Length: 412
Image 1 (cartoon, rainbow, N blue to C red):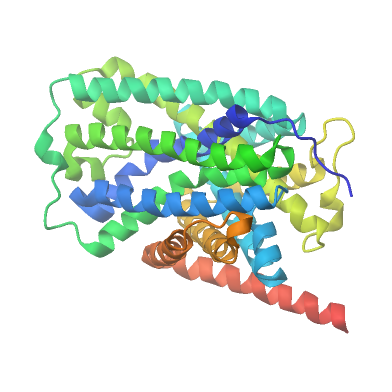
Image 2: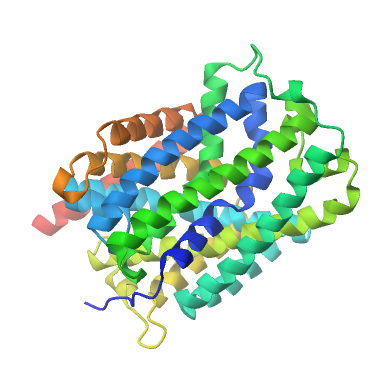
C-alpha cells in the first residue's frame, strides 16, 4: 500500500486547522445565528465552543492513537466496527463536499456579485491544482491566507470597539433568547468551528503524530475561539441583535456603523480570502478521507492512488474537485451550509463514541468529554432547521443502505 510522506510539524498543522476554522464562517454565520437566538448569540457561541472542545479532545486522542489519513472514518472502524467507520466517513465526505461548494460560492459572492457560480468554479479548479502539487505548498498558501484574515478581523474588532458606537447593553441576554433558538445558533456557529478535523485527517502526513496532533488541535481551537469571541462581541456591541440579524454582510455593516467606511472593501476582500482558505483546507481533508475509504474499497479503489512525485492522493483530489465544481455551479449556498452541518455533527458523534472505548493506557480522555461531545452533537443536529435535518438523515440512511447492499453482495 502506498503511503504519504510525513512533512508537517505543529506550526503547519495548527495553521491548516486555523485556515479551516477562521474562514468564511465568521463573516457569514453571525447573522443567521442572531436571527435564531437574538441576544442569546453569545450563549450559542459558548455552547458551540464547549461541544467543539469535547470533539477536539476526543479527536486528538484518537488521532494520536491512529495517525492515518481518514480521521473518524479510521477511528470508528477500529474502535466501533466497519459500519460506524463507514458511516462517519460517508457523513464527512458528503457533508464537507457540500461545505466546499458553500465556501466556493462565498468567494464568488464577494469577488464578483452576479457571477458567483462562475467565480466559484474557477476557485475550485485553482485550489485543486494547488493541492495536487503537494501538501507543503498548500500549507504555505494557508499560512498566508490565515495571516491576511487575522489582520482584517483585528481591524474590524479595533474599529468597532474604538469607534464610539459600541453599546454595552447590546451584549445583555434578554428573555427573547429561547433555548431552541440558542441551540440552533450553536449548530450554525459550530459549522465555523469544525475545521480541526482537517488536522486529524492529515494524520499520515504529520511528523511525530503522537505528539504533534494532540498539541495542534487544541491550539488551533483555542485561537479560533478567542478570535470568534472578540469579533462577535465587537459586532454585536455596535449593531445590536436585531440589526445584526438582518445584515447580509454583518462585518462590513459593523465597520460602516463604527464610522470607518474605508474598511468596508478591506472586509470584503478579507471575506473572499477567508473563504479561499477554508476551501483549500476542505478539499485537502475530504480528499484524504476519500483516500482512506478507497483503500478499504468503500469507494472505487482507483481513488487510493498516491502520486509518485507529489506524494498526494491525486485521483481522490481530482474527483473531489470535479464534484465540488459541479455543485458550485448549481447549488444554493444556504442549503449547502445546513446540509453540511448535519453531516459534520454526525461525524463527530461517532468520534466521541470511539473515544469512549479508549483505555487509560491508550490515552483515554476523561469520561465526561466524549459523553458531552456525543450528546452535544446529537442535540445540535436535531436543533438545525427542519429541511437540513430531513435531508441529512435521508442521505445518511442512503449511505447505510448502500453499505448493507455492498456487504450482502460481497457475501453472496
